[in-house]
Image (cartoon, rainbow, N blue to C red; front, side, top):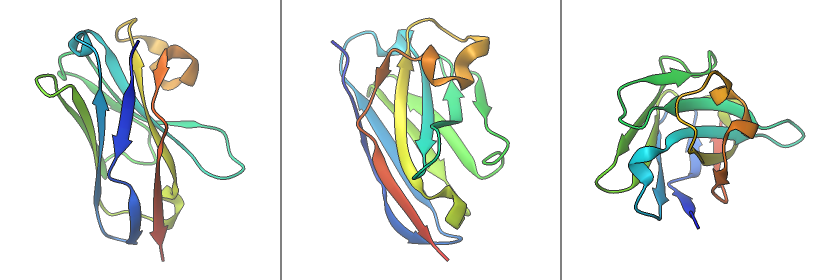
Length: 126
């Protein structure tokens, strides 16, 4: 059983930063690709960022490219999302997800991920 627990969300003003963390249980964390998604009220869950098992490659949604950075620490079983220059449109519940299937073309799709955290709320005020 894999458990993912996000933390670090909160209320910030536009232009400020937050760092989200996702702590994973299990001894095989380093064998999973990891992703961050977000879901705003009334909208579908959307891809934010993904990172390979080793952390050597990353991918970002165009809407966050240059502002957000995904990283991981396999020794700590943790993946991070550093969010800078936050905008009100970044307001959403942020979820981390784990994919045992490796670095796939479908990594931007929620269906590619087997395990999900409970989410953490990020609210950006203008």
